[in-house]
Length: 552
Image (cartoon, rainbow, N blue to C red; front, side):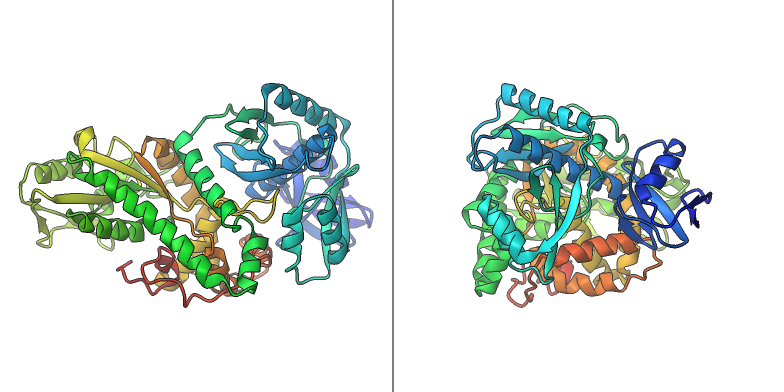
């Protein structure tokens, strides 16, 4: 017998060779949500793995990020199996997991056939039957050349392209009965875990809705976000047309020496989008306040500079305003549920002073603008004054710029609201997407190390809190924007790889951030690296890797 110590410090005696699944079933009554993974010495383990010595185990449920990612990944496996069972031919069963919707994934068939309500009902029925059967999800290691041949034969060309650049000689494949697929990351042990989902016809495809981490047994109704969806679809379609929609396709272009063309195309397209936004603003003479908001590491500062350049080219004179300079003094800053200062709350901003100053500027008055002293925790006045002329326009940046509570006194016709985010639309392959939050985390990690001296461990430790603030203060207002701008660049992860890997390797095995570092390092294994020398000086990516022509 060996002794296992698990989450709450309790002891469990089990025979050598006991699976984590068997242990999880014994201790499950002590957990509010179902256990889906185990973590041992900072490394995640699937539940079919066994123990051979005394260990300290942390059981992971779907209410934790690693657990929910595992649930979502497994749901795609279930979806693939159900589509396979309902399809008459291999061509008919080819589907693409394109990007996230509000609480799930948007999926299309490769042949672009629409998903009807009748088909969605049949698919749901089959998925429920598979879940009720509690079929094992098996894992098998095979040679890469064997896997590539198999995926070519069944029409999954993206997986063949991806595995072409695989450095190891083997790859893990997952199966449910006769359905075989490849996934970036672990799955649950069986289909019986996959009870909570909904399939809804949406646009040209369907939405696979799943629970959120905060409530892993509840599936919320689909909340359409047409502005966000249209931008995601537009970017996705362009990437597909340019044959840059998967990691394998991008790796092939890098291997062929086509990285310069890829960078130029991506940057040109982004500049066209910025120029179009500037034209929209210039064509609305009443607009005097451009309000820009977006989540962390979206490139808001570089975007503001580039938009200002375009506005100047149209005869306008933009003036930057940072909402952070309107923080209330530290003694008035609200605190969160843990008693910490909540700098991301709208209550941390002096909205009365902000509106008073902005209205004064719009009325043609000369206004003394504050500069917030973050070290002293109070606003200061350093002679920074501004008076607007007839062609002057304010470019206002801050996380609350889409929230009407910030600018409630400014007339609506004088505001133009922009939501910016790095909306990653390239995928690892047909069924493995790259979470948008991963792209932003990697951007922030690289920038924090360069400009603030933070380690990757520090950035990862703060990320959950950052994400919580975004869900509370930014995402609820994104559809209120006049326009949504996607700041992601199709080539950026190939450039960021060289910067991020060395930071991630610096995280010790006993760190709480080690499992996340391991996941991201595995993720970067898919990419061929490319150097940053061909990235233009005005690129939004320069805000993170350094060398920008702008002061960012």
